[in-house]
Image (cartoon, rainbow, N blue to C red; front, side, top):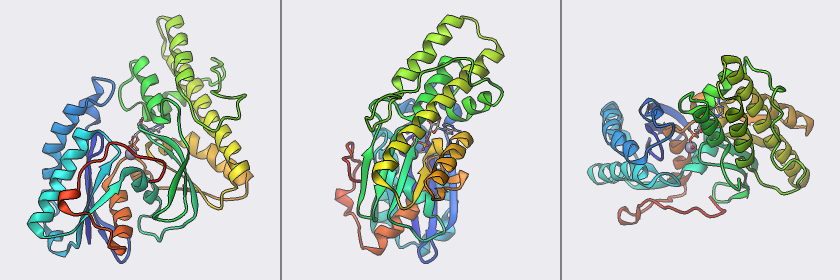
Length: 330
Ligand code: KG4
Ligand code: ZN
């Protein structure tokens, strides 16, 4: 078995995976969403302090598995440095105490492995990764070779949902809240512009849409419940239209063999439906992770670590540290 620790942002999570089956034997996550809600976003120092409380609480529940562990894995990048440090400190302490090798895991690679929990991996696969920190298209050719092909020039998809929710005073995280309001809204009432609609540039961008939403909210001044629903519906439909348009442009060039969507924002049902239709148009089936594993979790980190374990890809204790920059290769 391998233990995985995830603390890159505002979720404290520990998982135990069985190496032979890729099955998760233990998975617990303590989310800090409510603690950050009053600030409309994650406050790094608060997140770090809450990790120091939550991680040991979860670890206490893993006692029965400790004797069976073959390695300890931990997210080392990318993420909030003060948050990452908490998981890394715990992983180091466990490695010394239990005399276990350490595996360093890239959080984005972890999101991609959320597709393969309990399953064998499939490569090559083209992955749309939409989370609070990133909007990317990644060509995952193999475990060692995952290349970022398209990114956002400003905000990520999840971040834009969070910012719109904040403007409307709806709370944090914005994604699920905006999705709920959008269900009762008219997506046509406010004709927000689709970002980069007439451009061939292969990138995502959300700052223009976010500003257009802000202008509308300012114009409306006092918003009724229906106004809020209509703003959410208009924003969501355009945010998704942008993703679909850019994926389409990318598919025409790259012609993927397999296509998947992962990350916190991949829990959005309208996005999943639109991506499914797009995948059908191009003749393949959209792969998605279980809803439980879309947002940050240690299970996906554990699943990725299994592949490193099989390759003896360990990190010396003194070399295990957080990395603040990621390049184009995961
Ligand atoms: O993957 P994740 O848990 O954390 C990062 O790695 O960033 O993603 C969190 C993000 C947040 O921005 C949240 O608002 C967004 O995912 N999200 C959604 C939905 N559920 C979560 N965005 C749109 N629709 C959703 N249903
Ligand atoms: Zn994430």
